Amino acid sequence: MNLLGPELVRDLVSLIQQAEADDAIRVLVFKSADPAYFISHVDITKIREYRQEAEKLTGEASIGLLFRHLSASRLVSIAQIEGRVRAAGSEFVLACDMRFAARESAIICQPEAALGALPGGGAAQHVARLMGRARALEVMLSAEDYDADLAERYGWVNRALPAAVLDQFVKSLARRIVGFPGASQLTLKDRINSITLAPVEDFRRDSDLFAEGMRGSEAQGQLEAAMKHGFQTRDAEMALGSLLGELDGR
Image (cartoon, rainbow, N blue to C red; front, side):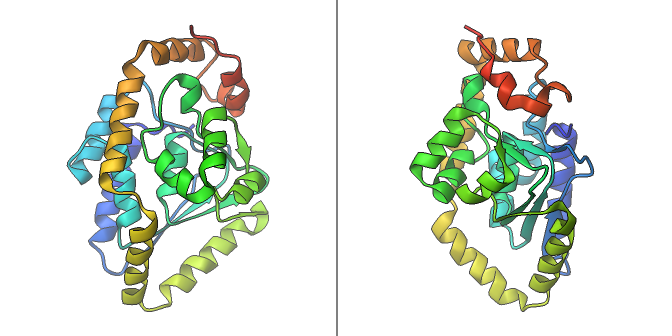
């Protein structure tokens, strides 16, 4: 179910390092080979381990700063979303420069509030800027699953497209971008980031708050209840929004 654990973070760090070192690579497209899951969320049993892998790129044990590095990179990143993308998975696609979702299968969620925690990978920074205050609070406090069409309306993704055309659309867009002069694109991305990308300090603060929250008794109680309901298992998380609504870890 594509949990974001140390192996996935290690591979992402390696990919970014290799791509940034190769001037011939200008665009990265991320998609999942699992039709049901893009990235589900972090592996809550390996938080320390995946944070250590992130540190190898940024110098700090934070996936929020790893994701922000991708946003600030010269590389243009595109998320092609099919299946479920939640929590840190949502934060990863939010860190990408563009997001395109399959209308039939994409589901997006920021479930941390239901577990007694704050998103630690940049969701608050991105969602508030993309959606505005009211909708940002709605999606984050509700911890509900949002389909591709509603995510498009809210600004979570650029476009919701039929699955049959999604792959070709993303490929055509990536090739079109690569066909234009690179220097001006780099300057343009830098200027857009200066307006819309939150400072490193804000990402660092969210990362620290996530770590603190996950150690708290409220979060521990909710996580224990969630695990009893099948949290972090493939079948149970097909409808995670419903599962979270049934929790009572008090």
